[in-house]
Image (cartoon, rainbow, N blue to C red):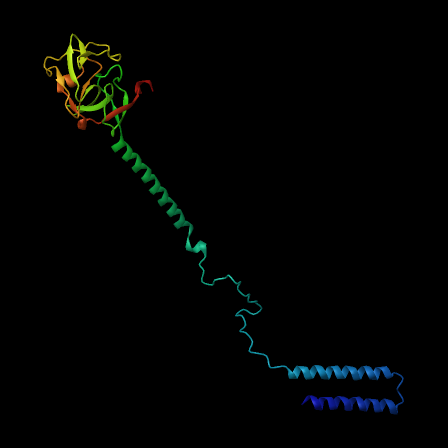
Length: 254
C-alpha cells in the first residue's frame, strides 16, 4: 500500500467521523478535531520520511558469543605483538643473569691471574741469607717488569733451582773487591748500615777484583758469613732475575 492511499484512508476516516459528529450534533469540542488532524498529518510525514530513506547496509557479523560487545582496537595496538612475559620467560632471564655473572667472575679471575703471573709475584722466604732485612717465613712481593736495578735494591734471583732474595751492591761497569772484611766498590770502602757482619771472600769462590759486565749486577746477602751470593756464582745477568722486591710481609707476626 502506498503512502497516498494511506492518507486518503485517513482523511476519509476523519471525514466520516466528522459527519457522524455533525449529524449527532456533537460539536462541543472543536479543538479536539483540530488536534486529531495535526496528529495524523505528523504521522503521515514520519511514514513518508521512513520510506524515503535508503535501505540499510549489510550488518556486521555478530560475535560468536551473543551479548558480547566487540571493542575496537586502540590506534597503537598491534595484534601480532608478543607478550613480553611470553617472549622472555622468568627461567630464561634467570639463566641469562647467571651466565652473565659467571662471565664477569671469570673475567675478574683471569685479570688477577694475569697480573700475578706476568706483572707481580709472591715468594715465601725459607732461607736466612738476607737476615735481618728478610727473615725466614716472610712473604715477599716483587715487581716482575722492573730490571733497571740500582745499588741497594733487593732483587729476586735463582741459585741451584731455588729463588732467593739478594741485595744489589754493584752494577755494570763497577769494580768489586773484598779486603780486610770490607766491601770495596770502585776503590771505595762501603759502609752498609743494614749489614751487621763482616764481608769475607769464600775460599772456593770467585777471584777478586771483578768488573761487572754490561747487563749484569753483583749481589750479596746481608748475612755475609754464610749467604750464597755473587761471591760464589759471580755477577748475575739481569735477564735471569725475577724482579724488584717491593713489599715484605712478616707472616710470623700475623
